Amino acid sequence: MLSREGLFRRSVLNPRRSSRSLLTALLLGAAPLAGAQGAAQLTLTTDQTVAYVNGVATPLPAAPRLIGGRTLVPLRETAALLGQPVSEVGGQLQVGRLNVDPARGTVFLAGAAQPSGSVVDVSGVPYVPVRLLADALNATLSVGPDGRTLTLAALAQGVNPLAPQARFSTDKTVYAPGERVVYTEYAFDPDGADLTSRRWTGRQEVFFQPGTYTVTLQVTNSRGLQSAPFSRTLRVEGPAVDTPLTYALKYAEPGDRFPDPQLRSYPLAPTQPTFRENHPLLFSNSPEVPTQSGVLYQDSLAGRVRLLGYHINGLKTGARLHILARNLEGGPVELRTERQGETAPTRIETLLGQVTLLDYFASTGGPTLTLAPGATVPVYSSPTLTPGTGVNVMQDLVASGRVELTFLMLEEALPPTAQVAQQLPYLPHDGKHQRGTFENAVRGLRVNLTTLPARLVIGDGQVDPAITGVDKLTGQPQRLAGNYGVRYHLEVYGAAGTAVAFSPRGGLYRGAMHVQDGPLAQTIKLPRTGNAIEPDQPVLLWRTRSDRLDLDLVPASGSNLPVSLIFYRGGTGTGTGTGYGGLFKPYQP
Image (cartoon, rainbow, N blue to C red):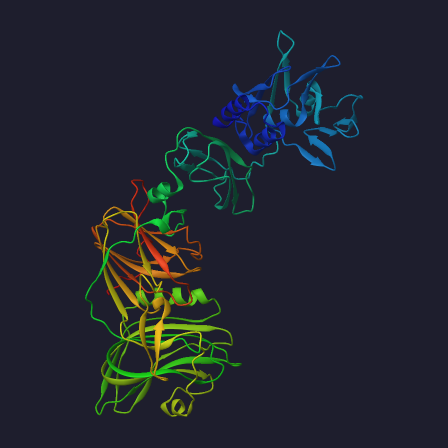
């Protein structure tokens, strides 16, 4: 097996390696025993630091010694090579039938005291006579004609025959830095019980630094029995195959992070505005934390509109967010919900934005309401918000005539009626957040990938200008920092063979994006798990198959802007490359 050969080569290349570290490697399972309960044959030579286990050369941290006319062997190291467990309690060592107290110099074999000098301390390593150890382990001992070569054979002890067995292999034993390691696990249970957990130590898909690495697996079955550790040792040497960046572009899964400290130096991808049907955005985010019932925002319009409300209940009681629509025409008006996403209630701000977007992209439409002249109906009502919890809703509506839309925060006891709304005060702007009507809720861009890597910046207010509008309650102009609620539709050309990644530039971010890559349509989370927060650790989004890639992105409420999309020339590895397995319904922009 590689582990012993690797340790042997390592001891030759680095003779000053401590005996303790080598012993640790041996105890972790590097020694290739004949089997979980098989025989181990150990051949030792006096004053030699190389031993042979089942014929395989293995470094021995402490050599056998001839002391006082007797051949002594290092206790822990020899037992480890024979597959024998050594326990230590209160400074006393126990292996097989042998109990040794190195500090007191006492030794007992099956409870019988042994003569003085049965344990000798050599530079902090306890030695015992080889014949005594053989007796303790019920091992056979033979001595070569030269009197210096010793052969011990013993059965491995301490294995529960009902316990599962951990097993795995790797496709190679020696790797170049940056070369992918392929693991094949074949752990099993002797009675066929299910393996319910696996614990890996030292496992990595790739090692970028030269050296010797030990990988260990332990498994547990459905009865709660745990296997003994099973280890293999890998050696990493030679010229590098990949850097962390090039490796990620080949093999990373969508949602994985990877390091790229150079990404801020990449040129901006050339863009051109594209004509798309536009519509206004009614944005209600101030006061973000209302402390009383009242009107948060209000405006009237006809046609298509996007509504976005983001508020936290600052009342001392349960409350709900409502959006009311009132018909201002002399005849009936139809009001149709094209798409809606919402999150409520939660105290986790980044959940508000991400779940709402995933819900929004998965939406296939809502009801069509018919409003009589002067009639008022709620087009959205949140669940009850306990104090301190929040709500985020994004809704696309189409009205066949002019309607008045009102965002209300109401304590739970108040009904969402026109009469109640008319009696409530208009809550003042909190001076920190935005509200208003913004005329351009869609930003279409054609992105031409001529030089790679390249980046596209969203929500910085400079390269990507903030949209402007008016707070209709006060008449004050508004600038929507971050462009929250704006849908970016990106037509990316020259995209075939590229890898797309996402970099948070302003801090913590959790959102979602819809991808159309030829016939593939999918919504993906940004990132797959947790939060994107490190600007120099972008998150892989997609590996593109088609020359044109369509991306739909809405800056997520509760997250920080700006963000960047990074386009790389894709690797040629075997990464899956196309997202999350169709968990969401296709989104049609």
